[in-house]
Image (cartoon, rainbow, N blue to C red):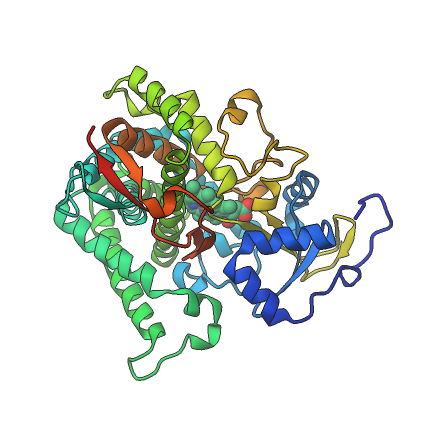
Length: 458
Ligand code: HEM
């Protein structure tokens, strides 16, 4: 639809009937569904979610620009949000307006590039420990079978626990790891998608399992907050919790314990599965592209095994590989904004309560921007600089992912450490044929199957 034509309301867009069938198709393979819809009905197109309502979607740079540049005072996150039970109502993800601005002003400095670089050694040591088999008791030696998702989740969880809470002491780390894993896995797809399931049933329901896991994690977080408040200086330079305890709003007040707890839970939820899933895709793509893998290995070998993590993160080909993986496999495939007033989006007159959506996968495969969009070709990022409305794995505008620098840094250091130390072979089932489709994994998405590798002789 042309944006220069007279705006029309969303009712003028194709209205999908058989909503449950569309929802099934979208749930089974979101990328395919969106591609089918935009091929058939153009851009924008309207999608109806059974428990969520209608969303006008775009997948073009022009649409991304309109959405990310829309006046901030007209934008809110869509509520109710299925992840609210996990993150809590005080979470940054759910905040809007002035409160969102203030919370971001407090949280964002903790994620500044200069602060993040302090975690380089923790990230590298985490990857080295995983390779040494510290967690599983099985080092990545020739013949060992590796479940990439399992390993990536363990590494990113450990990094986020170290970065957020400064936890490295093995016993406490084990307790946090088990509490966080139980909390994340107990909120499965049914609870996520069907709010009616969120009820008590004499201690037998999935919802009660989830709330018990959340209480356990909150208990650990509360103990840590009390301990830190009592300690001199609260460890401001040490980790994100220390910084948040010291942070003050514009009126000089500190965060309440409830807000702090929900922000910390948000960081665990948002920062763990997302990064893990990209690591899995990067390993998968690299091991299906021998020339790309060889070029990356050569760059890593030339840099040497003991290069400072900050320098590792600057290696150009490694950077290109990470960007290309995020392009093809953005773990957060849709970005949404609910309108609080009138706005014309892609030639559609929207009113308060309407929702705009960006399909990141469509944006990242727009043939006007990307040549051979389905090909894994990191070189494109060496040859060309893409703009924020063409490449947006971390969303954009005033809500762009607050943890993007940490995620970027972690991806590069973990990949460099793993590939610099071991040789892997994709299990035959994944080495050829169709790329696994993308399925929901908690708040992120990832390969539908657990991708496995075999470690080879170095
Ligand atoms: C590869 C890893 C990651 C990806 C692809 C990713 C992607 C995203 C996306 C697309 C959004 C929505 C942005 C928007 O609405 O415009 C988002 C928001 C957010 N992300 Fe990430 N994320 C990643 C890692 C992290 C990490 C490591 C953290 C923190 C530890 C984090 C914390 C957040 C938070 C708090 C928000 C909400 C921001 C707001 O609403 O203002 N994310 N992320």
